[in-house]
Image (cartoon, rainbow, N blue to C red; front, side):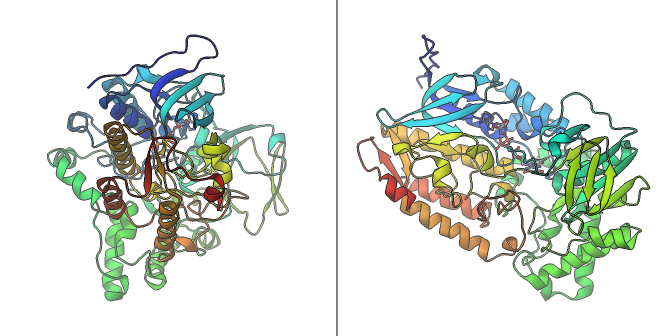
Length: 557
Ligand SMILES: Cc1cc2nc3c(=O)[nH]c(=O)nc-3n(C[C@H](O)[C@H](O)[C@H](O)COP(=O)(O)OP(=O)(O)OC[C@H]3O[C@@H](n4cnc5c(N)ncnc54)[C@H](O)[C@@H]3O)c2cc1C
């Protein structure tokens, strides 16, 4: 295959040209670069950070850890890689995953085509030559036929708009943008806002360091003990001798995670059987707790049995009944929000140096230079940790000024909620691919599986376009509309919509409440994607710029 080269612009105002511009050097961007090269294409990755790893580059807070088992949370595309890498724990810690990302970058010689410290601010489609012109904060420009947004579903950290936050005179840390130098909080009064996945991981670690920890909780969340432990060599070996077959089986599971999937209704068994099953899964640890029965995310009554079991566990672990009541979630079905896996989270609230502050009944009134006033109580603080999550799925994209055909911006098009075909492309934006975009299973899965599937689909699609000498591919408005309806209906049949979650975007003020991920599961989604490709990309228009493009009015309708 003939290989193209990246052509650096000669004059200051001339953009660097290549076949593919990829934004983001997390697991998605790294794999996209690898496959683009395999197609013989020239590609450049633009990355805001100074290193690879994405999520695992930014989220360096103490306790940051994967909640998919490490034997599964890794690339499957290279047998040699999965054989030679050794994970040291059942669930990998952030430093180990970051080390893995760096190892992959080195092994596949990726670094030479990644521009670090390079934040993309604009990407504009030029209709005259069907090219994307991508601009960076520092004023660099790149011109490419294809643009792949590998910007991540959980990469735009969300800072809450609380009166007086900027007046706080101590240090403020965000879990999603944790400092790279060591942070010492010993002998300090520390406040932490947020009790989602990151909060649940960081709180036990902060409690072990701080003089006193104040946990400001608006919504309690379900969490299952992770029961993390050093890697069992036999277990590792059983995976490594059967990797191909196990990866295949994992991809046949709804979340792309190989686990024990209950196939009966929780209501079809006796209360004793159910209790035994929940006890067994609780003792085993991990988020596959909610896979115990087939209807836990579909039937409210079935769900209540699991939710009540976990609430009872919380009441058993937490000594003070008033604190246990606050920690036991009652306002959403278990699993309807991202379920967490923890290490001694609930136990942490038995410590003398930890206070749970219920900001649902005592809202944060303001932050002042010395602390937080919640209700009528003032809490004096030296440092503040924001575990307040992300503008999920659309946040990183909406921070870039993405301009498609006829001046249409993605922000404008998605003002009432994102719409895509298969999460991969949005009509009006030819040759712009999104990895794990809204409308794909993404955050409901082992995200590396979702990434690999999407990236391989994109690479195959580009190979097809090269074969047929096409200048562009674009999702049709009608395929997109039909797909978004399918995404909506899939969610409607579940309990997911009964929680005020970041899946729905309700953690972001003003963001339209639209359930963004596709709930239909990895196998169904993958089958649809493959069928679309096999049909010659039904639902997409493919051709030359002069043919078949729909008008701006139609795109906004
Ligand atoms: C704390 C935490 C824990 C998680 N745990 C799990 C887990 O247990 N299991 C699981 O499956 N998933 C988990 N995830 C999801 C995780 O995001 C994915 O698994 C995966 O790492 C995503 O890879 P990515 O390459 O798609 O995106 P990311 O890793 O988010 O990478 C995106 C990259 O794009 C860059 N970028 C964004 N915008 C721009 C721009 N404008 N210009 C230049 N660069 C830009 C970012 O800097 C970032 O490096 C977790 C996420 C978080 C935040």
